[in-house]
View 1 (tube, rainbow, N blue to C red):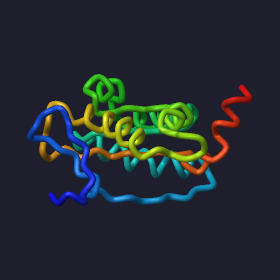
View 2: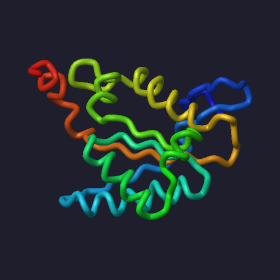
View 3: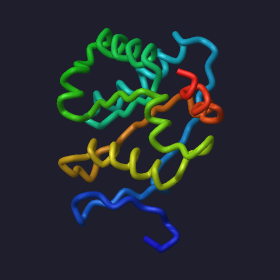
Length: 149
């Protein structure tokens, strides 16, 4: 790996998270039912294959996704106990790495990298981690709304 490739060093010396070894997709939706259907297939496939899934979403979407995954036969509680399914609150997560109205790269890598690292323990070379997040679009102005609470 060259010095220009960002990486996140994990707890074991032989394990390193290369931030360039990933894919990124964007899904636009106007209907929550559509989102939950697509998301349940995406995350359910990962967990069903023995990989990990991290969901960063609103409370309503986290609840609807967990219900849909369970309805499709996935044991969500067991996946949580195994550390292969993590559901985080979108607003709370964003606040942890924002500085003003802009995301801080170092805070983001530390927070999200830490969550990803935790999902891949014990280290498994072939384990994939699927991550879904919503509400990135409301980064701007988010602190203003939180301050009004």
